Length: 258
Length: 258
DNA sequence: GCGTGATAGTCATCATACAATACGATGACC
DNA sequence: GGTCATCGTATTGTATGATGACTATCACGC
Image 1 (tube, each protein chain N blue to C red):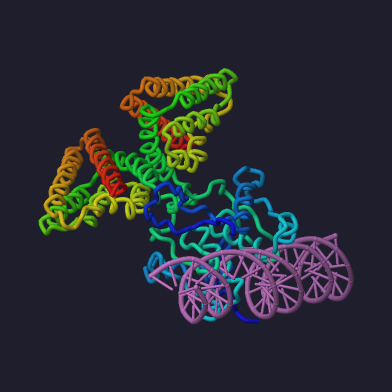
Image 2 (cartoon, chains in turn orange, green, yellow, brown):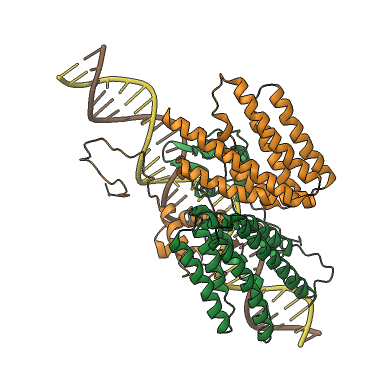
């Protein structure tokens, strides 16, 4: 038996049983991906440069074509390289860095969540401003519908999480800029819910007052957008999200002491 | 002969050719990736759920194992799924969202670049505001140094691209929020340069006046940050980036007619 | 000089086989 | 009855060969 992946850090003598969850078995494909990615990010392979052929990579790394092809497929999925049939594989132009991503692991701490909310605040404030400037009549209607949907959810004593998200998305849609939609899509799903879902189920009246307050902020945002008041929309959105951030901070702090 | 994607974007008098930038060559692997990703993000496959075996996917989609394996490799690289030899493939726990990314392919068109600049504007405006509220003395010093570095570069009749980027980064650093730094790191490298690099080399005096104007905007931002004036810093940054966006729009439009 | 066709290089896909690993079942052993 | 070694099966990991499709290049004829 050959000692393959020695990634097992054999901490045999760890008295406290600190057995790691599991370290990913370093298979050949992963190895090849890392080495190729290193070649690219280190600048050793300039953007637009042609990668070695599959055959050359095979012999260079001593692996089969399957491994090479899966590594190439992985890098292509990450956008680092593009392949063209009959021509070869090339380093993607204009990409010296991996895609922007927020590590979900880091979201554990309160501070990190608040940091993400700050980033979101900047994007959404601008989103509201642009929506006020550009929203088309159908988009304005969609925003109004989303607002009313929250009203109905509150009436049914629900948390209105999905409806809240839908309103923010409708505003992002109204910017006409797909990046705002995608950004919110990426962040919103797991940032928005937490800030309101923590209220204890028993305190329905408290939750309702809380939702009514939020809905008042929503109304201010929508009113400003309808009035084509970009600055007012930005301000209203800023108030909404900063107060939401404060609410979350207090809830989290209270929970921390519970 | 089928009209495949002519990736040659060559704008050789693109009178009314309406040649698409490039339509993605829908190969089987890409198709499989999309379909699997849709199954996951749609919630059809819960986190932790086991994917069908490769054999089942082969017969289900009517493709070979190579295609299935490359699709799985791509999703694994994106962190959506994890595979375990001898067991199967599983939807990654706690990952309902794909990383936020801006497809570099889309950056070809002027409209897309402007859209990205709008997103950046939102983030940087907030960045300036937070920097005004929180910048520590060393961070303020770093911002001042970056400002002076631009002065020196202008004195040397250089484009000051790197120095400009450094100033924006210093401000992002001063927020104390790493997300702002990473976001700017991701966007800035290939958005900022373009807006100033297009000036013709011959017109040095025009470039210098242009840079002096930008530097005036920079000074206003830094002054507001130093004065702990968050609203003023936001406003100054907004002015800076909106005017930069306009400059880029005009430059690009002029180039388009050239 | 300019289109045109042949040709070679390369990726895309398929098919098959073997290796490595994990899990459950079975049965021996205490 | 419980524990553990063994084995068989299922599944992914890796290797290899073959074929098709696509592209760039170059010689060729006009």
